[in-house]
Length: 411
Image (cartoon, rainbow, N blue to C red):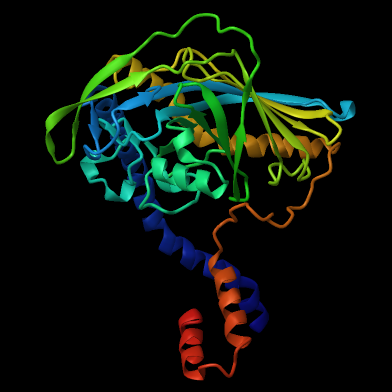
């Protein structure tokens, strides 16, 4: 009797589960297409609004500067990654990349297409945008009370530089789409009062959510620029809380060289196949010239041997969100939105392919070096740290210790 009970109890249990789940499965099968159609319809509606309706620049406030280098642009691009040394471990891959360029100091939104330097949590529902440049993501994470320009000035002072030396700046980065934000590298181009590119900041975010910001000065190659870039735009805009119209002036930079070169010590664990250390060499064109993106980054050994190169280059003409026709914006959104979302899975795919080849050693993540911004702690790590602090001081304010223990480990 017992044997029969033990033998058939799994089947009986499975029958109960099946009987319970069948109505729910029927409901799920019924609701899934409806929810999917509703989600797709909502995205298409948002796309049409972003592309065709109210696509004008509205400033966060009227107290901003009126003169900028560069203008907001949507850059389609391609990223190529190549290992050159050692020869037995060579590989090459590429994928599409999508970035947005903005003049630093400009804050507002272009209709429902692009939010610039505005905190998403402070935007009302009808102010939400398709793409977002969220200031909390850049340089020092958090600090949502500061604008991009304010954060830039704080960072420059922290590395011993005078912000007044760089009155103009242009940021190129992968924007946030919905809740997704992942930009492996953000490029800050810093310009002198003569409107020439003189320094850069490369903001590196690795796969472990660690961040390090590298400031370096650049020098021109001395080669003459092919053609003068004489475009200039004056735009009439409105600002929140201000009934008067304002004029903003977007103008080109004044490069004296075709390419600009700089370097910095690699003090962040950027790849599981690359050790920390060595020299990173950057060669870039001025992105406001053209405008276009042409950036080469190489990882070199201490003796100067080039190991890995990454090339980021424009893939077609950039799109001006303030001037392009609605159908071009709609086509661009449909073609390039998914590129930013899929960049992280593509990187993981290539890393797995390289590891499965078995020719490169998969390195363990080292400790975070001083000067880098570590990832945010998990809940378990926070509890362990707080427990260590509490139990290392058992005789100090025992009542408070018991209270904190109960708050960390609630029953």
